[in-house]
Length: 139
Image 1 (cartoon, one colour):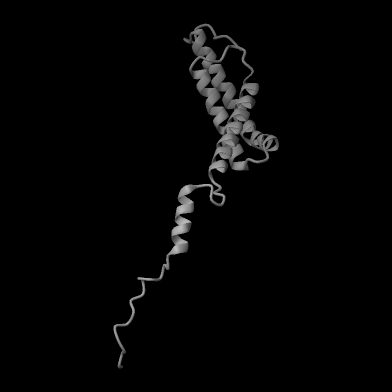
Image 2: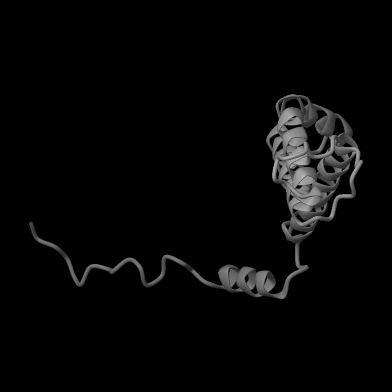
């Protein structure tokens, strides 16, 4: 990290944040192009769009950490971005897994489904929907 130049008006923390912000801006174009494919290679269950989102969120999260002063000077930003992207991908896998577990309804596993199925079996759904003619029609 380069220190502040004499007379630039920035204290050490502001200079560090400016330096980190510039490094993130410099890393972003290549990271945002390459990283989604690397994440998808590591997590083949995820779509490319989900992997792109993980890479974008990694950049934002790293920027937020820096802005909050939670990155130590000398932090390897590339490693930080890579870890953040993988963590986002893992979170997405967990979210999808929970959704997949809630989705299937197998046979009589759910009481509401059982009651609805029994009701439908016992009912003639067309009964009452068709009004029978009141008598012979002479036309």
